[in-house]
Amino acid sequence: MSSSKMPIGGKIIKPGNAKEYKTGSWRNKKPVWDEKKCIHCLRCFLYCPDGAVKVKNGKVVGINYDYCKGCGICAKECPVKAIKMENELS
Image 1 (cartoon, rainbow, N blue to C red):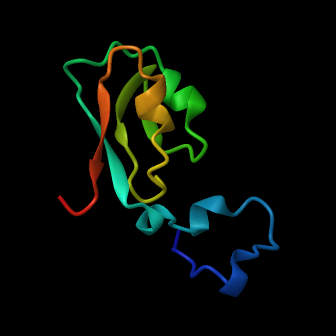
Image 2: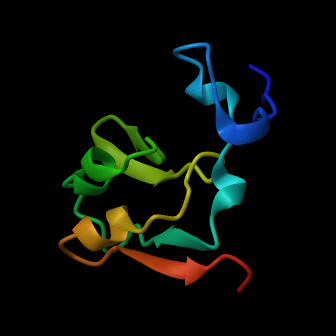
């Protein structure tokens, strides 16, 4: 799978191709996941609008920064504060 360049204006005509466009460079904050605090309730996964929370065998295993836009919804929804938002350039 190769990464495509976003067309001018952001209009994508071909359906089902979200994985071709790596949108992670849009963010200015990033979620940082603390594995030790995580209770694997999967709320972050369920609420993430970008599908950027990685899950394997029913457990969170990380964040896919290629697609995470840094909206912070995962951090807000986490009941144990296992995800915190940090400045991208820090």
